[in-house]
Image 1 (cartoon, rainbow, N blue to C red):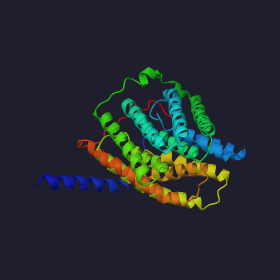
Image 2: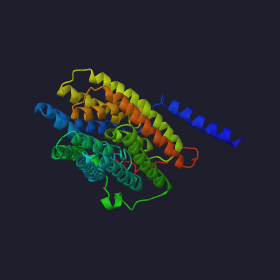
Image 3: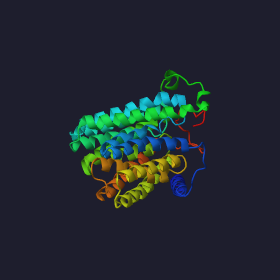
Image 4: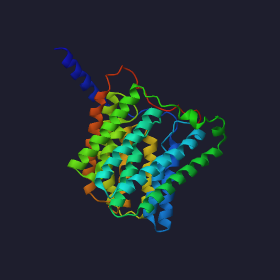
Length: 367
């Protein structure tokens, strides 16, 4: 008789804390503006070149190279530079696979599961940190959607590769600061040591796989196969890199609220007559806000990254400003985030105190 009320109290308390967290902004830690500035430059330069040469569509494909910037941000600059090409290669491979399978809906779904599961395994076993499988899933889905609509394989994959190469080149610029050379970088063998499949990594990987399989199946059977990657992306990002039930509820709520706010921003921007130059400025601003807010308020981050991703994808496919995508994205997010929250039941109730992060080593030098 007493066990059931206690469980209800625990869940009620968890939901109450999740709701209260919407009004809480975490205190700043290390400065984020250098990473935010770099990501903004990486995303804006291809767009500005595209606008100047009257090839904005190529700039939109290349600007996804900015998705490599958040990876390995906790590592020293020299170590980060060694790993960033790997992040770029994963994005290019995801684009190539998506572009190849795009014309075949059933195979596209299988490929989506494969990308989410494979990247999830690497992220959780090697402690690669945020943003996890999110961006490979988005790039895979964007590329599949483009080739399904008749775009050329080489155009899509080629410009994504150019954008990732530009992101690596832009990563070299901060090395002019002497502080980055005071830290002896580890070798790749040391950084990517043997995977540690402890309990937390296994649980997070299992949740990622469940979200990938169920999210893809639900989208293909009941909503729209071409939107499956949005559902899976929402799910894997809510799974995140932190084991535990409470953090899953928090991230699920923040993701849903942030998405609703973000599609509102997208609708507002879609009603504006934005030329190529204004488009570049808008995406750069959204990217900067995303990187500044990521460690302080997840709903605010989602409210910025949602219109960013929507504008890139819909502009690349000629659907920018279409109101129909708004309700679809909210539905996809609710389904994906809901699945991720439910899979948190895989975790046993954890001890009180701060959650344990499955992260790479903390930064040892300044950005």
